Length: 161
Image 1 (cartoon, rainbow, N blue to C red):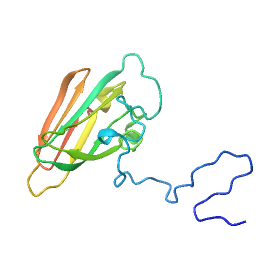
Image 2: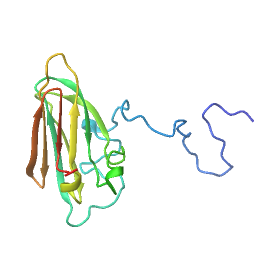
Image 3: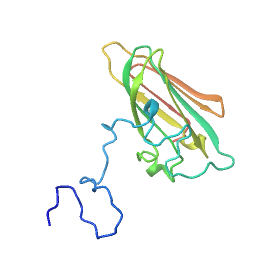
């Protein structure tokens, strides 16, 4: 029997599977987002990587990033409540959106968080020879709770740690 590199033989009648990632990880720093506006693949207006239904008492969180110059920005944001601080930086809960942002093209992402005071976070950076003057904003249930401005990068957070 001949097998091509990266193809895994499965027993007859078994469901086909994708070949395993040899490194065991996905390099989110270089991966292009598959969804619109830099959203992860399969993201909806409310990102929920765990696939759970929105819970009662959860809040609608809106992240917005703008710049004064057009550039490709690297934007990290919390898309769902992680189980603890250790998991907060895991790409499951904090994906990367690599997308074009400019004066006429802000980046906006909405998600639902059960505890936005603990987890809401967005960070944006990018490089140009001219300072792009990043600005970020976090709104919870339509009310702006954090707004920051920075040069070649900016960070907005409600989390106390």
